[in-house]
Image (cartoon, rainbow, N blue to C red):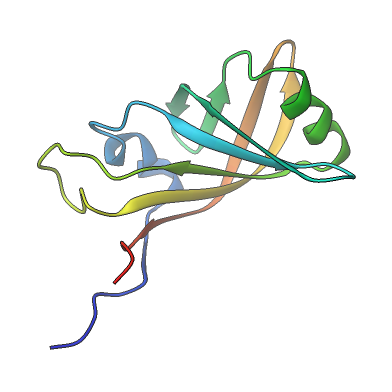
Length: 113
């Protein structure tokens, strides 16, 4: 019996349906000096994610480099692939005090063996 697939693609427009039971995400941004990770809540609509008031460091990094990653950890809810993390890549822009992310790729990522 082989290992489960490393990742399983999620259609960006179906992302919201896959986040059932996942309360928050980690937003990963990079600036000139280092990566920045912050835990936060997101609003998802179709293939867009809105990060509400992510903070100065995340916004400064997005202004420098719009490529971001979001990570939702596994959930204890009994939903499909509940033991997988969800990893989303996207292109971010500043919208007032928020960050809006256009999803370019989304996957379920299997747990460590």
